[in-house]
Amino acid sequence: MVQFNVEHDRIGAEPTVVVSATDGSTRLVIACRGATLLSWRRRLGGHPVELTDGYRSEAELQAQDGVRNGLLAPFPNRIAGGRYRFEGRDHDLQPGQEHPREPVYHGFARTEPFDLDHVEPTAHGARLTFRSTGIRPGRHPGYPFPLDLRVVYLIGADAIGIEIRATNTGEVPAPYAAGWHPYFRLAATIDTLTLQVPAASVVRTDDALIPLHPPNTMAALEHQPAMDFRQPRTLRGAVIDACFSDLRFAPDGRAETVLRDPLTGSELRIWQVSGHLHVFTGDTLARDRRRSIALEPVETLTDAFNRDEYASAIRIEPGEERRFRFGVRHLPPVSG
Image 1 (cartoon, rainbow, N blue to C red):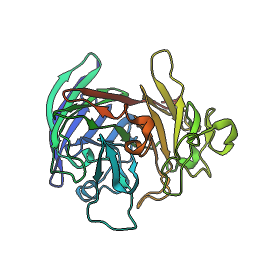
Image 2 (cartoon, rainbow, N blue to C red):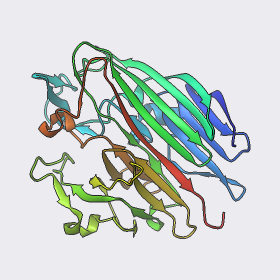
Image 3 (cartoon, one colour):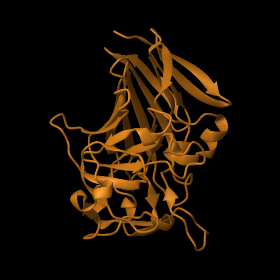
Image 4 (cartoon, rainbow, N blue to C red):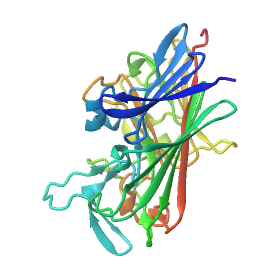
């Protein structure tokens, strides 16, 4: 059984938590800001290998460019124009902003301070629970709903499981959905890697990447060959910023996306228990474009707060707790 040490540290002035296997095989760094995974390293062939492309400095973490490995709540991806209507009331996430209005991205949790609430050993690693009460009325314009958030990391020798738990502590229903925005890497560029996504359809969007409304939302992948990754395909030449839907879930309840390095056999298997998968090949990142790929489990489509078909799915009642689970497992090189 691999045992882990948990220590407090900092990246600049930002507090972090370092989780390391006592045998030196695995090391993670998690920032308390957003409970954000900064680094996941495994020792392979005697050398530490970084499997994510997280923030490298205090300045990057604070700037949030690229939303590297960010946990997304109370909404994933974009809200069109920063406006939505819920329970008969209009809400504006960008009050005072005139046209043109940009979408609002990726929720508020990624910038909130979290506290390490609990640490416990498990049979195969460690479980860490982070807690935040930062989403409160008056803190974030256009979102007058109080939420308590807990983020549970289940860390093993070759895997990370994450669960986002949200509790509505208010007296009225609140709109809510969650997701994760991780960037993964297995080589110097994603162009040498293959991707397999267990989806039957891709979401059609407008020029602002806002999904079209029914009946034009989904396009079957048999009619979208350039986006069809149901079988492993190379990422060379693929430029993607799209959401895949109608995921195929295995008997264990998980849908599993596979990123693989054919040269070594090394694989990352990203799993989720519900929702959709957004894929972004990183072509517009401020640094290291196409060095990593974002494979993002999300509960709902982009702009779900403005979609009638998600009215019940995003509704969280007073006192209700909502959970979303996902994670990743690393299979080392065949010869490793």
